[in-house]
Image (cartoon, rainbow over all chains, first blue to last red):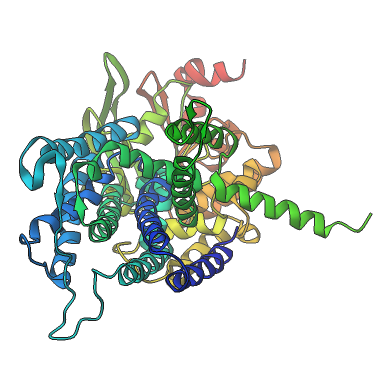
Length: 332
Length: 250
């Protein structure tokens, strides 16, 4: 599929989503917001995984870091200021990505995977095993941040519809920003590094610093997703940094089709719809199908990775091509 | 005397106990082609890897345009005006021929840390890429994906990418490898043209091409320089005939 077709598809989807609060129940509006948040998170990982060739298995660290930043910045029983806490939270994620990236980006292949995992787990246990921000139970953000400019409040984060639209706006900004970055001289260098890093170096590109900057951008965007998640649910816990989440987002990217930006969004959507659907499976006889949803999810992922080398987006593209070919044929 | 672009002194590389290259001193001059020949395992590729910065030398010095570049990284040496091609075709197979050269040309910008401007709008870079493709005789294939090019065209693309970085010194590692007679002839013609405006260090097994092109020849055996001089003198050298030329005509 061309990127233009992708963009049109996405524009239609975004417009459709924008209409949901007018007819959908609260549960579904919140579900779609969560879906968009995971879409942002998955896009940020795609910048590393699909475009730079950096298989980060610790991406949740940056998602969790900004969420924890908001939790720590929020005074008990009072609201933090959105306009200050948001940039601070993103800056914390970006800075963390800079520090971790400085060490991990010089490693390659399997070592990169292990080292990113190790750093993320260090952070996970920092919050899990100490009393910082509620320890392993996590912490509630009792009062959502207030987005006041003087006396004017453009949106209210206690209102789930406002949260939904805020998430939607960030989703669009992140998508457009990443598309612009990928088309820029910087983006072209990343794609070259993924294809053949040694060749890029011999062409005169100092690849380390490009990879590091990509790592920081991806970390900052993961931070956007983490911050939005913490205001939506009002709770922050160590699992937001855990390897389960890092693994899940990686699955979403691969499932949807890495290196496409749109694919990971589809992957995130399919993942979350499946999770929702499978958990709702009925009891058949003495077997509770819904309780064992992870078994069905696992089977699906195994099948998808065996049968769809280019992800769901790749499947869609090849189906479209087949239809196009059949149309092109003269009538028999 | 033409300008010295490359000079090495006592260049040596050990792999464990093996001296792959030892004590190699040679020069490459502007407007001249210096060919390095020798049997397989003589250390020619290791030598090129040291010159391009892909491999740090164990000892010895490399100077480009009179500047000591020993131990600099590959991207730094590239930016000193050194372009290299690889023995095994090493292009971006998924990209078009144009994008391969465009990316190569983009490396000559001060930095590519630009995030908001479309790369396709860098007119200077586009022009460099087009010129490089034309110089390598690939202007008709700009829009083709590299993996769809023939082997010979991929070798041309390899040279075109190198040219797009506007080097003074070309390090070419067996550009004729695997080419048919016709493709070889056009590559030889291309190299003849390029040598007018570049200093070229050529590693090559095709002796007909080497003797046709070289202004100067260095023969390496077991990591060492056996003989160095004008092609006619090398051809007449009894030691060389015994060690190498004789062998290759078995």
